[in-house]
Image (cartoon, rainbow, N blue to C red; front, side, top):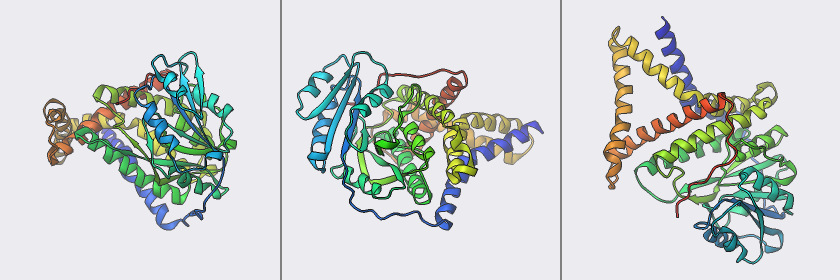
Length: 384
């Protein structure tokens, strides 16, 4: 009886993220009045903020990119904050005329760099981007046109993975799926997740980011908490390398993101009240809270299926399918990841590997959050 109850609960909770939440978003997209707004050109002063730590390999290309974006130079400033960098980052930035440079003598954390930059920013619209994200030429005016609607407080751009490969294909699939969800969320209210590689927010709505939170998520939640919408713009893009450089990096990255994002939601817990924030609260609960418990339910699903497998052929088959999925991930890790030529089966196995690896990192992050561990700063891992 206990095994059956555990199996049923696990299936329901897993389906809540993979099926129920997308289905709710799609149903809302179909039946709710579309909250579209006129996308008119919007002129405003803009501050592009880039916080870096030891980014000597990326910062020159980033600034070259930032200086050639389509936007009026009189109302456009670029602010670079060096968060205790000890490589050549500072010297490279100082070589660019017209770029505002701020240095933090100690490596404090990205949140401190963001808050310092906003204090110095003159722009009414703040655009945040990372050193390893190359922004599309018309990204800023594309983001800004949403602000012609006074109800819009922030806009998230879209990431595009430029390189290729087996594990990269799995990550590219996830980003594309997430973009579809965000598009539908935008038409019915606000998105439940933000893209730290490129987003814009009204300076009047920005609140100082505290330590130990996911900065882009926190900024987005604060905007929604103040009664403004935070929407998605798929045509404002940032070209990035693979978010996860290798399996070890994916575990560390996912662990940190889970811990800090849950802390940010805890600070903004009133957003989980559906009587005040409606459908957004449900999306946030499923997509950003229950989703973090996914590895727990995957484990209980596997164990309960194993316990029931001897009782019924259907249970045995269900357990075998799970075992085959995880075995595919192991096969990719041990064998197929070393095969450079991308084949269909390799791509499929890489999805199993990436899914399993990500959930392991998520489990570690959940444990850290429940233990009260705080992640204030980290050394970013960047490709050349």
